[in-house]
Image (cartoon, rainbow, N blue to C red; front, side, top):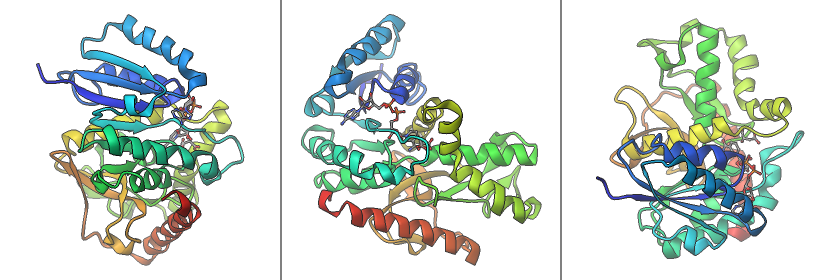
Amino acid sequence: MKAPVRIAITGAAGQIGYQLIFRIAAGDMLGKDQPVILQLIEIPPALEMLKGVVMEVDDSAFPLVQDIIATTELDEGFNQADYAILVGSKPRGPGMERADLLSANGQIFGPQGASMNRVASRDVKVLVVGNPANTNALIAQANAPDLPPENFTAMTRLDHNRALAQLGQKQSVHHASIRNMTIWGNHSSTQYPDLHHVNIDGKPVMPHVDQTWYESEFIPTVQQRGAAIIKARGASSAASAASSAIDHIRDWALGTPENDWVSMAVPADGSYGIEPGVIYSFPCRCNDGHWEIVQGLEINPFSRERMDATDQELRQERQAVEDLL
Ligand code: NAD
Ligand code: LMR
């Protein structure tokens, strides 16, 4: 039996938390042989609801769950955490951009970064889901100076998965046969879903992609998918967000397949001319618990313009939260 790993989840009683916890408990994230200790963090008004969630986890009798902690105290929730999935924050409503949440949500992530800096595992792997996710990850990272900066990531895997689904439907192929999808930049409407490196069953897809569809349908559909779901459901995506969070951590921890890569928002290091420091989504390969930005991809002027626009937005968001960094 492996030693259990500690997984901290904020916003654990919310929509995404309710999906995430049960998938993790079932072994979908770290494997069916990896016991887990769930460290669930909420704010006081949601504690009663969180207790109800804990009752349901208990009632599921998951073989992998060794212990469950439900708390409103950050240092208790992040204590020795090996993984931290930061979901807790407000979702946007209709007509809002995710960046409109910055002033309400930004202040949540500084104290969480500081708490992890005090009590989490020295190698805690952090995934920020709460919006605006990229800049919230930057805030958490800035408040955790003793932890590895590269361990602070934000989620664009949902956008990546959305892009796979849209392309698969258009090309009449199963999305599992699509490789090397890339989301560049911010988890926002400036993100750039890039098909130039994609191949399907080993063949480049671009020669079969209609440029008008690419520019006027595919890119805007992926960029606006979150808003479309809010309009249809009256609430933001939850099950698909939780599923993508599981994909993100699983691939980071256990590795990406040989012939593929994934999109992860990670601290920019100057690769592809992106402003160092901003948390920017790149094509990444993971091995042995470490991610690496895929290097050497050819970037044409169409892509360059879009990659720079989303970089620009992230620089502006960073400037807007300077006092929290
Ligand atoms: P929700 O309102 O259902 O749940 C949020 C939970 O967070 C609530 O239970 C609330 O009590 C809790 N919370 C609020 N402040 C907290 C704090 N300081 N500490 C701990 N918990 C706190 O919302 P949801 O649908 O679960 O969405 C959560 C966030 O995830 C939103 O910001 C949403 O926009 C974002 N999101 C991101 C993606 C992505 O792809 N990155 C996808 C979907 C949703
Ligand atoms: C999403 O992409 O579904 C989430 O970021 C929620 C939102 O506000 O769009």
